[in-house]
Image (cartoon, rainbow, N blue to C red; front, side):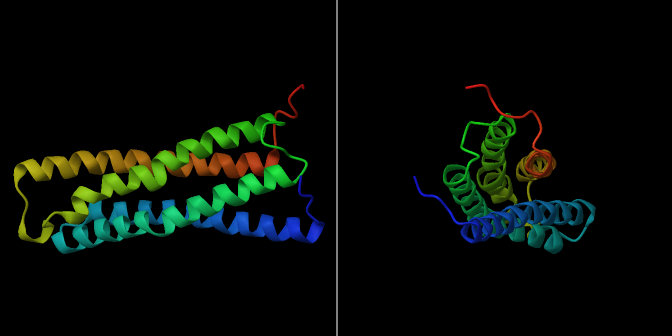
Length: 166
């Protein structure tokens, strides 16, 4: 097993915090863009918001999720924390799996229909209802994503529940 020096551990933790912050920031950007899209009557602004969300879901959301997972696993394996030694770490792992489904997977599919439709030209009733349904799913996903990431941050700081009995 690799043992990290204190300096190496700090660098790996810094990378983990940066990737995690990008994940949370991305979720907040999705929230802001969704609010703009929901309150705008200009089809080109609505379309631009959904296109921006879709691009983000294919780029920074995926990259930050991968970076967070890789650095988190390395921190767990290469330090005394381990992957399953503490209840708070297990809770983080479960919430991370949930965040993966919501983030790179959910956000991509929920923004795809709206980003690819011809919103400025006027959409048919069928497409409009599909976009409204996706919008509701997107809102739910964004709120759940922000909550799960906030809980993950909370777990990282407070480390409740202690160590598992071996």
